Amino acid sequence: MLGLHFVKTGRLDVRFSKIYGHLFNTSQSGDYGNFIYHSSEKILPLLDETEQFIAAVRQLVAE
Image 1 (cartoon, helix red, strand yellow):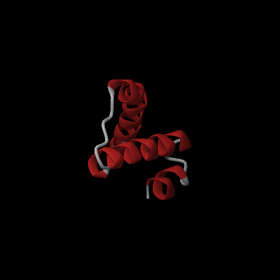
Image 2 (image 1 turned 90 degrees about the horizontal axis):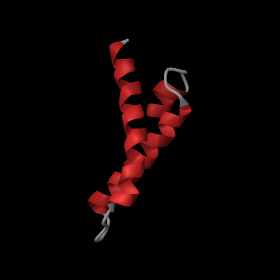
Image 3 (image 1 turned 30 degrees about the vertical axis):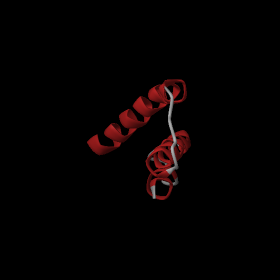
């Protein structure tokens, strides 16, 4: 729905859809996978992208 309502309409850059997808899949594997452990080496690189995504969503909410 993110892609349909925000990316396709041009309100959100396509890279944020990809970032969200990656974050969602990582979260799902951690929550529902069998004995999944996410190390800091895997998670820390996502921090900058996550902050950018949050900033973009905050800007949309403010509009």
